[in-house]
Length: 299
Image (tube, rainbow, N blue to C red):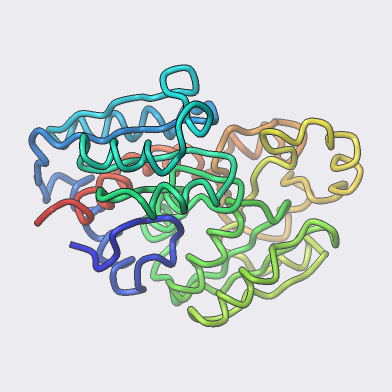
């Protein structure tokens, strides 16, 4: 089992535990590890809609011999008719673990504070650690040992990017982050990265970021709930699109956590091209989360 009770961000686990989760995930994926969590129940709280998060967690629990229960905004009165603390206390007694996909990261922390069962962050506006597990598993499979990998994040310093920054610091991946000046990674995340291992190189030049990269990663520029910023952000991110021109100087593999807005942060030919790891990356959400759940729940 992991030393932590909850998985609210990637640095809730240590670097050695991160390696253990990724190794467990790889062994489960290959069939070398056939651990079952018979009759275990995962309660899944969704404030935001989802494709990969819901299907990967639900499928993962089924394949582990357990059960996942979907609870959407209309199924429970999350934070409206009942305090979050009460919801957490009750679900923590019904289920073996709780996965939450919320807007406000503070709501996640409140649920974790009052739940006796492990709470897993399926995404908040601040962090997406389960995506980082899948990202690191994909890099290890396709690129190589972490201490020999040069990675680049190009685009918005959003929740996915922030968890990736921390994950790279823990894994020992040399990372360069390229964002427009007003859309960088939060300072407190960079400070935490320094404590965990090392801070990424920060630039506003995407060409500089990808020049020596083995893998280049991007995400949407307009996240859920930011639709009113669309015009402003499209202007700010001009030149940050992953396209053949930007990537012409490198053989780097390409990653994207999906959903993708083809023609905005990435072109269709790059997303669908030979250098794309996107579909393996999406599949690895399933395997990485199974590794995490087993490590959290197995006695």
